[in-house]
Image (cartoon, rainbow, N blue to C red; front, side, top):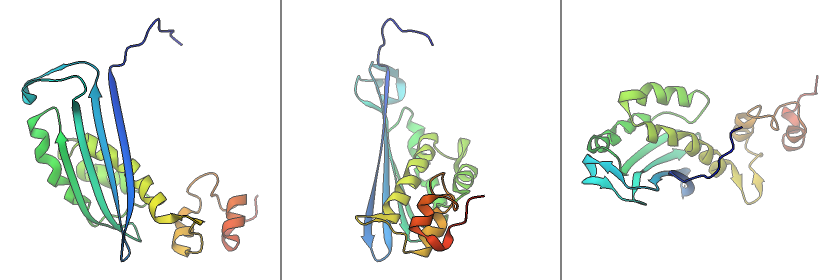
Length: 181
């Protein structure tokens, strides 16, 4: 490991996601990303310079979902970007409508919106948004909604703790638990 004699902050990226219940079996997840430099940056598309503390990127992506994680609506917004041409790609994210946040979603989204077909930063927001969707839809003040078979089946074997031969599944959903080998 290289020891630094000093360190100088150059870049800060902040990602935040919020999940909301809309009622009538619909939810909304809003992801936002802001990139800020600690120095003024030359930029012809932004009047010649991006000032210290002014966002290089300020983008958001809002997905409206149903209980099955079907994307019903998408709103992609670019409030700040380094290039004027960035703003024109927001509408491309409408291609996500009709997809589900299920295994394989990331691959499908990259096929639709990867590279020149989309915005790298909006695409990056999909990971945290998907995780926030799971937390929003499948947890409540009472804990995991393990009484819903659709939730339990989806979560089963999704991570080490929720493996079908583990203690958590034996307690949460005994009928789905397998004996350890």
